Amino acid sequence: MRYLHIFDPWNFPLCTCPRKYSVDPYTGCEHRCIYCYITSYIKEPWHVRPKKDFLRYFERDLRNAKILPISMSNSSDPYPRIEKNLRITRGALFLMKRYGFPALILTKSDLVTRDTDILSSMPSVVSITITTINEDLAKKLEPMAPPPEKRLRAIEKLKSSEIRVAVRIDPIIPGINDNFKEIELLVKELADIGVDQIISSTYKAKPDNFKRVAGVFKDNAEYLRKIYYEENEMVRGIRYAPRELRYRILKNMRDLSTRYGIPFSVCREGLNLNTAKTCDASHLLY
Ligand code: SF4
Image (cartoon, rainbow, N blue to C red; front, side):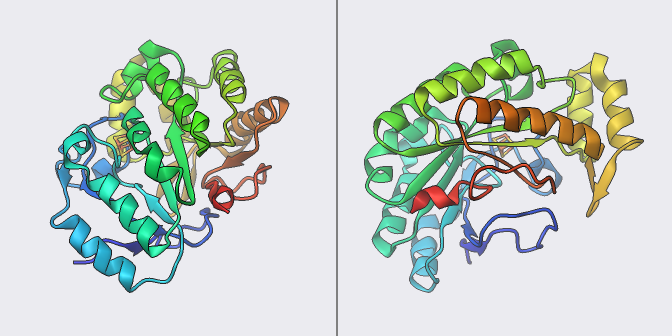
């Protein structure tokens, strides 16, 4: 059993992440985001279960690994509700600190603020995803995730504990959450809180997530079908929106972030729009 893996072992051509590991203390994710891609490769994707003997095997993996940042998590959320009692992610952080591995946390949960003590005592960056500040829209996109307001308050708390925070406005689904008036309100609030980086990308369609997105946003389904199934770009079998459309959306995001003084990067887009040193905020670790 091996739980620590090199991130992106398939060398996706548009991934610009510096070398790092990836680890998931849990399998499955309860947030049920309609755009989620884990449903294409994880059985019972919405059922969260801890990995068997996770901390024991994780410690063994750390003892034998070269020091690199560890991204937690990329196919689940490291802070599902059961983490409150199980404290497996918290245990993983203590091990990472003991063995000298910096932590890149990716979450939509405000439970991450429970661990400010350990996170502020080791090299760490927390990335929190907020796809919209419109509560009704968030409920449609991420039915079981904590509401955007809770995530904003979590960011505030992390920043007040001097923890580096990146915010992922990601994915942006054309016609759904690309209202720039609303996005500007979010970016302004992030600037007021003092977040260190904004990371954005556009939605990528896979058959199962497209079915959910088109099912929830019926009025947008035809437009989305056109841009993802007719005018689309294919990258290693993944359906991207047309390049000009993605460029327009993400350039707006870059310009908005720059106007509010926040470094910006795109994730897996193949577009030269970054103003931040790394696409995954890992430069903030040092
Ligand atoms: S938080 Fe991530 S892994 Fe969990 S359901 Fe949403 S997109 Fe999927």
